[in-house]
Image (tube, rainbow, N blue to C red; front, side):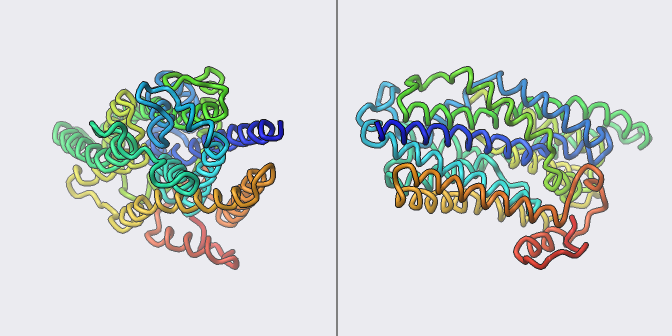
Length: 418
């Protein structure tokens, strides 16, 4: 009975923590859809995040392909028929629940840290990194589903790493070509008419990105919760998602989206390129096309990578546009360390939870998460960014100052403001 109670406690903590991750995913990624529309004035900031929240909610119900990728592509839990391995779950079911919990902790901690720094890193890779790190700590390297059945690019390599490398390049190329064509076709149109017309177009394309984001990112938390239910034995179908999981995840990401994540919106909208409405529409169109295609194929890509690649592409495609490659370089550096950093957090928290064991282990892990989250939220209040200052002129050194302020407990001056 004690074993069952510990398992139930773990399931409850996983569900709560997964929805918390979904919430952070929402406000961390709002900028992917709405940063350019806010920067160009096509939408007022509060209107933009409200519209994005509604469309994320709707998009979460349109597909489950990505959710099934998360359930099946990270940890080896299936036999050759695709059903969960009974022997594996019997021997590792409780460990798998702790792995999922600690993987989520790794994802949330990285999401909050990069949000505090205003860096648009990947929520998806933070989640997968945390899960991989906790899996290696709990089961070993062989517990990670690196390449699926070995006959095709599947598993972590095919469904996560390859899309991460390819998607921003594809999105950037599409956006660059689209931007070049737009300015070529409208060369004789007065700027004031061009800006006004494309702002209306931006509303439509930004809405499509938000819808696409719901079909991709909301699915990841659905897959994590389903994996936990399989580990507990209360769900056995690796090809479907419980309806209550769909609803709760859709609501969590929508609420997070409505909060805005203004620090990241500012970096995407003002930090990479001084963007115009034609560029914004090109970037959003490219992002939506890549994300929707990937969701259909079940690729759990990073919408942040796609959006950033698209925005950089518009800077390359517009003659004479200024691209802040220093900001882009810092973002790419954050991308490169996302998987291993979240993986280290996931592994360390697994070791802590496993060391305490029983009821105490998962509770200690949860308390660690609450403590770190609370600390980063308090730090963020020292240099607030919201809908009132999200469009202030960009200072090239503000990301560096924000990083220094996050590391220095004495940083309270206005210079740390973003």
